[in-house]
Image 1 (cartoon, rainbow, N blue to C red):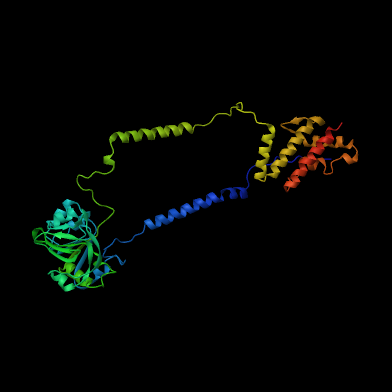
Image 2 (cartoon, rainbow, N blue to C red):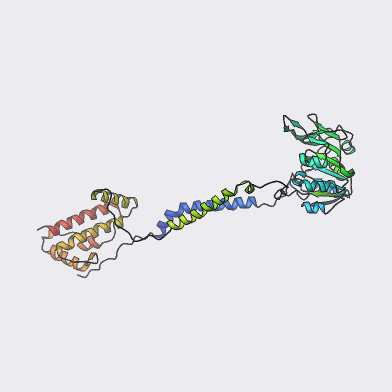
Length: 401
């Protein structure tokens, strides 16, 4: 009888096993990638800021700019302080957020000789340079600000008298002598007219909501916008760049506030971390056998390994372990030498056949030695138990004197 010895069982995981093990990690990575793309897409939107004359958004001012152009006013949007300085003597200059300019730029603007400056929500610095007679109103040391609402002008300013009620609010102001206040809210005006240096007329607005697309058609907002911004043939509309606010003289950044010793200490820690990483990443040497700190019973090791096989449903590996152990135990009994860690299959089966032929027919293994020792893996747990019992019966038959 010619038999062939099957090759060793491979422990390399299949593609389906790899997919089952890694699918949740891949799903998590995909979710993180989609979230990063979504955040990047939202962060990279090219929308316009509020009160931008090019914006058709509700908080934009495109309708106001078009209305001024229809009245013959030249609207010139500029987005940098340098461009603002390049147009000296413009009839009207609109500054939505004048505090984004440095004090030196504000002084240059005050000395440029513009006929009218319109300031929206200016702070103390801009008011102190461009409109010294106007101060932010305060309540208990906190600037007084209120939501925009329809308000009567209640002042002699011609533009306000012509427009009538309009939506004014935002920052409220206190006025010195020689200034005019309009649209009072809570006893403080939301619009102020003050003389500037060189004969410049300065209009201070607590809020520019009445200039937006969504509010221009309400009350007298359009008339007030035309009166304040369209009284001169040219309007320079400054678009503040919120991402590039210049650093004022004397200001220090966060890194300037860190002592030099901390910087050198951080550098030393970084070098130490790199050296520690290189030290721990060195190539390991050969495996060194060590004595176990405790003695573990063989039965416990066998049971633990069996539970691992059961959890992984590795019936093929468990069956191969049982068969390999049985072959190693039968080979010395039958006088078959073990070469390269495994007895020769042909010699082992021939010796088994010779030993079993000497027994009575009822003592022979019904499945045959070849099927027991080199057969296919069992299909279920019951077949694995039967295989273990049959291997024990085969060993008893061989060892029976």
